[in-house]
Image (cartoon, rainbow, N blue to C red; front, side, top):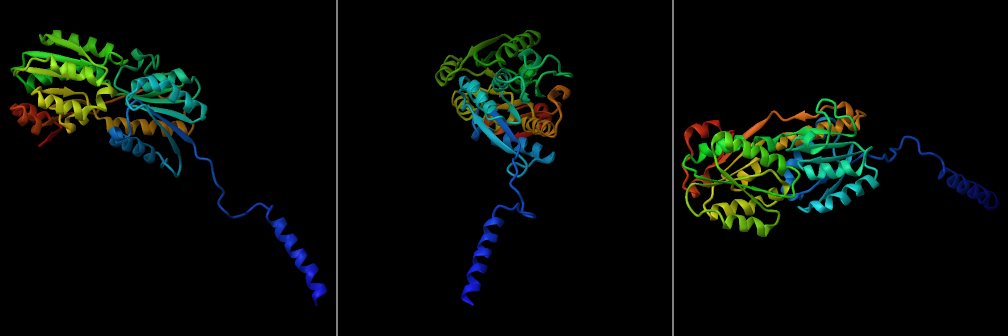
Amino acid sequence: MTAIARPCRRAFIGVLAAAATWPIIGRAQPRSLPVIGFLHSGSPEANAKRLEGFRRGLTEAGFAEGADVAIEYRWAEGRADRLPELAADLVRREVAVIVTPGSAPAALAAKQATATVPVVFATGGDPIGLGLVTSLSRPAGNVTGVASLNADLAAKRLAICRELVPRAADYFALVNPTSPLTESYTKELLAGAATLGIAIRVLRASTDEEIEAAFAILPRQAGTVVVFGPDAFFYIRRDKIAALAVRQGVPTIFDTRDYAEAGGLASYGADFVDLMQQAGNYTARILKGEKPANLPVIQSTKFELVINLRTAKALAIAIPNTVLALADEVID
């Protein structure tokens, strides 16, 4: 009995050893997910709602993060000088597509980093003027995306500001001199001011100290208003800027609703959550095989006026009913 059992046992062990090398049939095999490189000049905390819009756009097109696609995030935290290296890092990691929503400096860094990896942007500036594409209808190259044209709405914000503060006498604009959007924005602003018969002084700030210095030179009297240029540097500091404006009694208007939600008096511009959602849709289409060169740049058609009544009361400003009736949202 014992003599027979030993050979059988050795044979059985041999079968197990061989089985370990057999292909496993019927068991799910790990699969490699396509990877999106997400490049932004701001911070994740400041862009949480916008990021959800981007993910929603992906999900609508069949790509749930973690299940159908992986995302590598690179945040510059307000330091535009870090963007070229962050973009280069994503290229080295061989991501399937680089997304730069809501950040013109990030879009430019991605375009400079690669001529082959698809790039999807969502910017407030003119994509042609910025050098991202040569044509909106036929982007050519590896870059396409969504344009909010927020930088081109400067004149509209001035007109709204005059309605909000009819007795305004001193108009100021605060821009970031290092932003690629500043030149076109300032040109649009000054042209709009001339058309409206408004004299406006442009101030510049690219550091926290310069923001405070700009506010310090504003006239401390009723009738002073400040229009902010679109820029990620200001965006990630919106809570501080809104608090500073209220403390100094200065009405402000911005390009996106996030500022009004943070305590700014008003905002007018593209719905950036919707913009991010469209960027997510375009990213999904590229993951499915479409080429950026064949995807025309989408121009935003959804704009919103948001007014913060709490801030208006703190500034002792009575918002005209005609303006309130036009608002898409009033924050009480």
